[in-house]
Image (cartoon, rainbow, N blue to C red; front, side):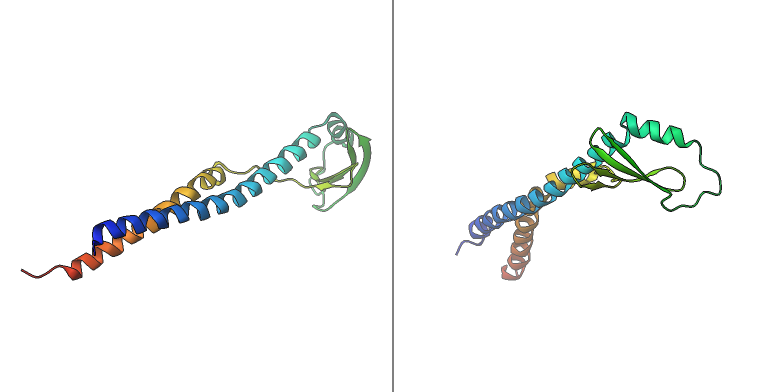
Length: 147
């Protein structure tokens, strides 16, 4: 038995299996990141629509002792917006669209989330590949004859 060649082949095969599983996991995470970006962009586009800006300007400045809960659900019916729900300080809590969806403020996905999506297949290869080589190194240490 050739320990070196056998473990090298085993490491490559397990590394390729790891790439496949890492790619599948990466794909599922990519879908979540893309959905989060879509919800963020859609909310921001509607929140910055002219009708919403006019609505917030017409309400004036909030008082210092404004409550922090919903104080207004204003019907808009413009630019695909059915209603805007405002907080006590006139921030936008949610936007109802004409098609029945409710959009909430969503943070844009971080650059770290995008980087992780790219790293998963690489980690899927490196973890099993390096593990097999580490195990081979340990076994070779026990198999060596003493001098």
